[in-house]
Amino acid sequence: MVSATPSPSGSAGPADVEHRTIRRLIPARVRRLGPRTLQGRLTLGFSGVVALTLFLVTIFVLNRLDDEFRQQQLADLQARTGLVAAYVDVVAAEKAAPDPVIGPDNVVNPRVASALRSDAYQSFIADQLAEADVDIVLGRQPTTGGDAAPIIPAVDGTFHASVLAPGRAGLTQESFAAQPLQRPATFSAFQYTIVVRLSNPYTFRQTAIDNVATVSAAVGALALGIAVIVAAAMALRVTTPLRRLTEASRALAEGQLGERIPRAEIRTGPAEIAALATQFNAMADQVEESVERIRRDRDRSRDFLADVSHELRTPIAALLTFNELLTERAGDDPGARAEFLHNSRVQLERLDWLAQNLLELSKLDSGLVLLDLRPDDLRVAVESAVEQARPAGRRRRLTIDLHLPNAPIRIRHDPQRVGQVVTNLVGNAIKFTEPGGTVSVRVAPAIAGEGGAGADGADGATITVGDTGVGIEPDELPRIFDRFYRGSRANEARASGSGLGLAIVRSIVEMHHGTVEVTSRLGSGTTFSVTLPSDPRREHGPDGTAPEPLRPIEESPDRGKMVDSSPTARPSLNGETSV
Ligand code: ADP
Image (cartoon, rainbow, N blue to C red):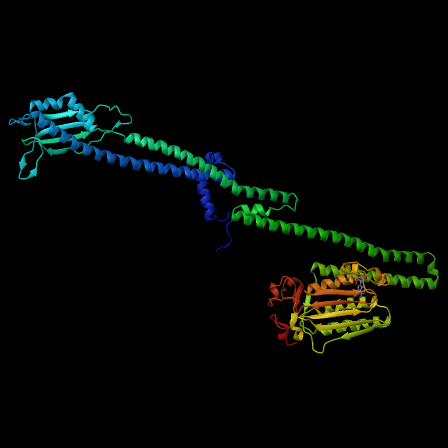
């Protein structure tokens, strides 16, 4: 059997292997000597490359120059060979005249021989003309059918003049020789041949090379110095934002959540580090926001716990009092006993109501509640909730008007939860309206932009619950959806209220991705408007008004809170449903 599980050691990537090879090539002791900071490494790396480049270029240039000089000196030496041969030709002809330079017995004319061996001539030829060692051969060249044959030296016809060190500074002796020059004598009436060979000349080649090497070293040192400064500056430009990033991260880790890298600093750094800094700032924003939210939630939970204990204490204290009274004296009086028992029951009902609402709210908040979304007619859910509230309305002698459109409003909603919303809103309206007043409930397709009402609930729907009751103080309006909040006008209805009804309404509406709004005028009434989208699984634009195309339920971010009970397997628009 072949296992596809990777080995525990893991397989090293190519970058890993490369890194390890480099580590193996450089001994640990040398590695330890290298700088540990990024700035040091960048500076050293850049300077090293510049130094190596300079070194190689200098070596190459010096080498080429040396070759070039050598060629030039050789050509020069060759030219001087011709000059020496011409000079010897003239001198020999002059000294021998009117005799031949080489006599018929093949012996060099003694005047010529002694002149060419004299110090004055030798010094002039070697030190002035040739600036090199000079070998001169005088002889005859036999003519063999036109071909040039080797010269046959005449007796006493070989001369050598060694060059002396010249007085000029900078000249050094070389160890090469020019090609020998063979030249027929032209200044003498008698035929003979002169061969001249120059060797070991004095030249400026070595001095020139030394000068170039010195200048190159000086320029190289200067360039290297500039390279180190530029590298250090560039490395600093890279590492400063990194250092700033490290400081900001440390501050964040120590709990200074407001720490950010200023925009001006971000802009000055290289693009990659600027991107990193921008990301860091975004991350810090997120962290700060999350911590803030957690703090707010913690405060809210603390307040909530305090509120719950407070709310529980009131009925429990009342129950304890009744219990004590019944145990002591009032237990014998049937009238008092009946009254206390009735009051106890009221308090127990309140406790039960409180417990139910708390449980409901915590379930809604924790996301444990799944919306059972159905493409049903919204009118049905609203109507049934209103019908259930009618007896309470009648008891308070209120008129309850229900306005439903003739056409069904099919939007995807959880009928039971929407019923609960209407029950809570209508319950409040009944509670806060004086006898003789009116509670009106209206259901209508939502108005989508300028286009008017969408047909068949395609753009959602609005449920409006209005009353002619006591109204809400304007400064209380923003708080009425808070848990346990009760307005100042709620005193008389306090016994039956928990301050949780509107919090539950808001939670359910938000789970449907809908909105709830309230308008109120003191003394004349309050109106709650709940707007529900045609399909909560649709994404909404930032303002909640521009729904994007329908997404399958699996992709919806809130899918954990929704379950689809639609009869069709694929998600569909309400207009398509057959129910
Ligand atoms: P309660 O259980 O106290 O009604 P709610 O959360 O339902 O709690 O309501 C919170 C507060 O909002 C109420 O105490 C009341 O002051 C105010 N309120 C809600 N509905 C109405 C209404 N229809 N008319 C006047 N005030 C209202």
